[in-house]
Length: 188
Image 1 (tube, one colour):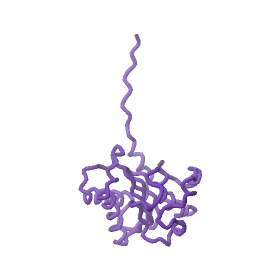
Image 2 (spheres, one colour):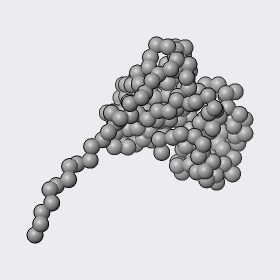
Image 3 (spheres, rainbow, N blue to C red):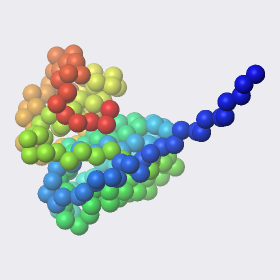
Image 4 (cartoon, helix red, strand yellow):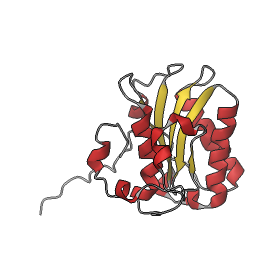
């Protein structure tokens, strides 16, 4: 009987995520960062609020601006404009560290994150809508407002003026196919 050598264990190549990464002051970035092993420790209200507080604090320091964010049970999406003090990676590292400390939860984050710098031809609206709809499209709720959503300036997004009185999306938005977001770059 012929024996084949054991294949090596799969190797994460997160170091490749950093290749070509540049931080441009004033540029708008869409980032996604994930909990280790997709453990849903962000589902606790304390952890959700801790991450939102980390984002609000950074936003209030006026070195960059959060445009929209959604904290999901095992990941977070943030759309933001980069300031001059921190690079993209440092912003995400700070948000992760502050959220973990404030939550008091022993959950961990995956080592890296996914990021996309919006080009001049890409608008914020579709990215904001994608972030807003993420918990609804994932089936986490159908009505009402998601407690992990935050957009500091409602006027930055037209779609916010179309929401139901309870803060949720119109029913027809939930029936949209994935093609509705084919023009945006996501980690999914």
